[in-house]
Amino acid sequence: MRENSTSERKRHTISLLITGVGIILFWRGIWELSQKAFSSEISLMIGFSILISVAIIERKQLFKFFHV
Image (tube, rainbow, N blue to C red; front, side, top):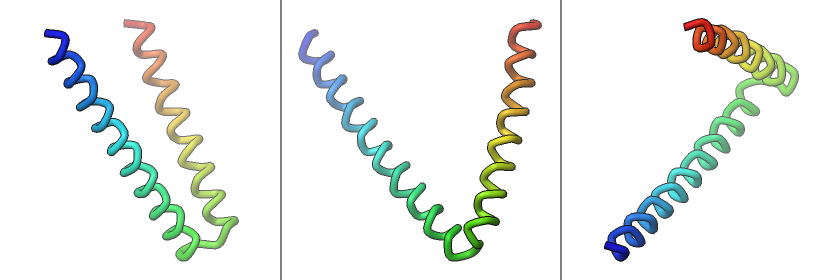
């Protein structure tokens, strides 16, 4: 039983590492693409507006969670 737990843990760890590398490479591609398509100022404004939008949406979800 201990071998199954160890092998399963190794499999999950490898899967997590591969997922992390994939996310990093995907983010790097988005970053380079946005540098080519937009100027730095426009990218900054778009990123800031996305962060504000996500914060507003998450705040609403948080209040829904506590009021239920």
